[in-house]
Amino acid sequence: MTITTVMMNISLNSSDDGCPKVVQVWYPTVLGIDLAVPQWEAIATALVLSLIILLTIIGNILVILSVFTYKPLRIVQNFFIVSLAVADLTVAVLVLPFNVAYSILGKWEFGIHLCKMWLTCDVLCCTSSILNLCAIALDRYWAITDPINYAQKRTVERVLLLIAGVWVLSLIISSPPLVGWNDWPEEFSSQYPCQLTSNRGYVIYSSLGSFFIPLVIMTIVYIEIYIATRRRLRERARASKINAMALRSTGGKETAPPQPDQESVSSETNHNEHPNVSDCTSNAKSLEKRRKREKKKLEKRVKEKAKKTDCLLEAPTAREDSVTENNQEVSSESAKPNGDGVTITTDNDKDKGRKGDTKKQSMRRAGGMYQFIEEKQKISLSKERRAARTLGIIMGVFVVCWLPFFIMYVTLPFCRSCCPSDKLINFITWLGYINSALNPIIYTIFNLDYRRAFKKLLGIKT
Image (cartoon, rainbow, N blue to C red; front, side):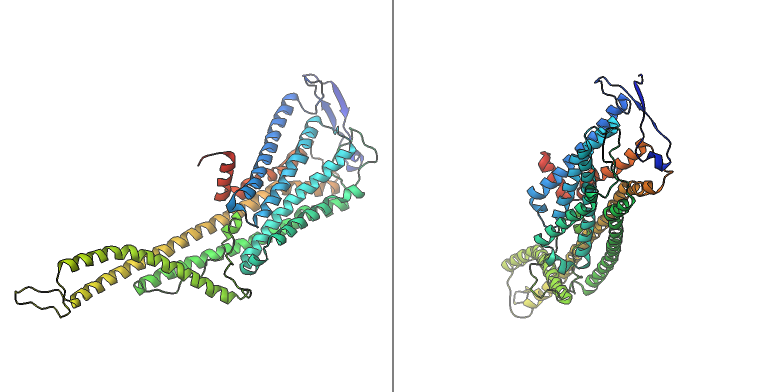
């Protein structure tokens, strides 16, 4: 392939940053358009990036439709997930296609006004995506540390107000370059790169608001959630052992039920469960009253389980007693032989038999109650472990995707000798964009209801 044009691609800041002048090579195509990369590379780049855009769009649309069409997901805390999906969807629709064209063409062909709007949308949508992640983290933190009060405060109005605050804050962070806080040229040509302003004051301002402050908040919040998860795992493990010892030692007598199962971290991770506060009165802020109320509820559930077990255990005994009574003569007197030398079964003998049966039933009932509580504890512990693992994945993916970009974004205006290549800049930038494609996967793949909703929307039979 021959080279048709060789030109110097020098940005307006190149004389000040100390970077060597870069010779831009242009490659012809069958369409008669010169590209900044070879034709095969342009095709491969377009296919890969277009696939990422398509997955981002489909994934986030599925999330939005799932929340509004699948009844188990229509709960107030999932509005945060919808807001996150909207932010990621706008990134895929308004930002990424222009980035693909710019990367392949090597120059901006859409005018200065569209350039400014594109850059503003880029900062706005990406900032909103990050701040929505932060809002989700805070929502989980409040729900775990103060489940009773926050369950009452987590109304539709409050959640919508928080979401509106996220978008307003994102607009405040992204709009200053439009009103003059920038280093964009007065006149614009296709030789001038359409890039984020390198004004040092705005770089510090936007990077703090868009990433570093949310990162600190999310880190602290997820550490607290992780600590709470580990503490709850240990407490429930101890409670399980105590319950087992108590049930075995009492021989089936009812003991104090375990501490109530508060809203688990896993339910907050999946955003699919919420505390049941329908029985709370207006003065339900007393934690001691809440605990007593929950104990009664759990005790009632355990008794119901035991009652079902008793019905299953006592049914055969009742039938056996009926058969015995129909085939034997009973007397209220003590057991003694009659004149014919036949011993009559008395009530005392039957009472002894019943006591033996009752003792056996009590032991079996204790085993049933113990098994019921053990299964409940195992399920809860399993959910908590999955929740802790999910939180680690969330933070890990977020940091891997966005930290390189913001380090580069903050470093370049202050480091005149730092001269990354265009390919490296594009790779780091798209690494951040990929977070918008991964968010619907991370926040839904660990939730059974989302998976069911996706299958239903896609017409996949389970």
